[in-house]
Image (cartoon, rainbow, N blue to C red; front, side, top):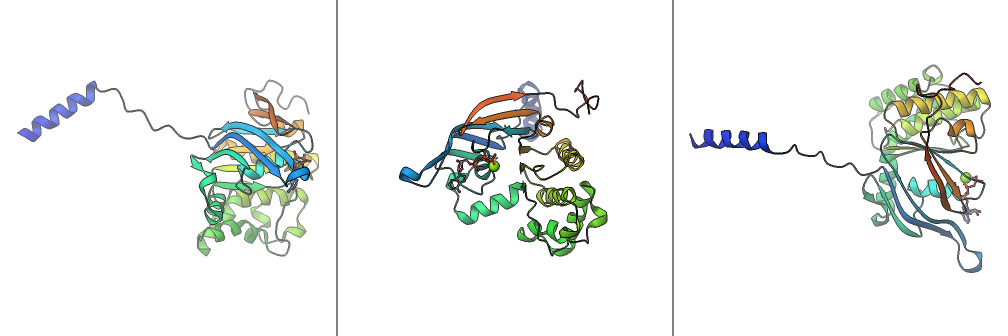
Length: 266
Ligand SMILES: Nc1ncnc2c1ncn2[C@@H]1O[C@H](COP(=O)(O)OP(=O)(O)OP(=O)(O)O)[C@@H](O)[C@H]1O
Ligand SMILES: [Mg+2]
């Protein structure tokens, strides 16, 4: 009886209570006044000079700026390949400055996928084995590893060439394999530093389609590029000059249904 009363009261209370707010998700990238200085004294290079930047889940950001402006330095920090000289970086709410080397490596493996300009695949190892590597580091067992690597290759349109070595692939195929390797762990963040720098226009378009699909599937992407065509696919463009953010704007990406000029100009 008492418990029935309690239950009634609880139900009544619930009906009059405001709905519980879902927990606020931290940004994927949260940089606060981050600086990076290479070297010391007269030889010191101040590559990043106070960058404050937030990137939320599902964002697709292009980072642009002249050569030497600090884009790669910023990407290395964001990807936990390097640490800031000062300032604070939180990756999905984790304060990167508080981690030791091995914790940093773990976060990198679990949360970040990297694609570089020079594909960085092991040349004598099959494509599927290349894609499996981050899973091996993460301790995923062999049958599941193979299954997931093949699924990632399928996503980038390379399922058929899984057993070939990278040196028998075109540049565009190698870069898509590199994307498969970057996304196979299902990372929180996909970082690409001039991923189309070594690709011709057809391969560039194929790679952009892969990035678009990854974004449409919920991925968070930051891509450094010098090319307008590449930046046009992002939803946001951040401009860097001399280690500082000098522009940050949202745009309608080309390739999206909202884009009025899509495919019309080619
Ligand atoms: N490991 C390093 N040691 C010393 N200086 C470095 C190092 N890495 C980068 N720098 C310097 O920091 C500055 C920014 O370099 P960074 O590679 O971040 O530029 P970037 O914007 O990526 O250029 P690019 O478009 O040419 O790739 C440059 O002056 C560069 O010479
Ligand atoms: Mg660079």
